[in-house]
Length: 131
Image (cartoon, rainbow, N blue to C red; front, side, top):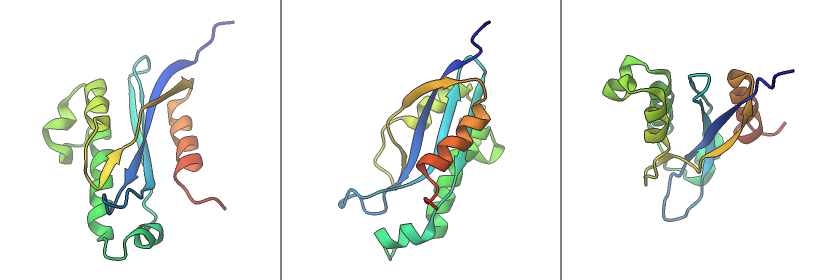
């Protein structure tokens, strides 16, 4: 029996509304699997948690910034020239260290046979509120 799982990399999208405080909330995941030619994202901005960290934060602006990461992942034309890059380069660009309100955390790896399902699982585990 052949193992059909492939190495994937992922990063959690973090929202840091006040950099000087160093507090963040998770707002999405980016998942890249070179072998399966897959780059995907799942995003969810919890506005109540954002306001708990910074009552002055503009949720609409933060949501647009989070959505921009997803647009680049998807290769959407609204992402501009970045969307035309090969998916591996897009993932590396999205996960490059930056000091912005929305940024990707460290890159982690795993094994997958179904990257869409793993992106959903990571969103549930790392981003969505525990119920």
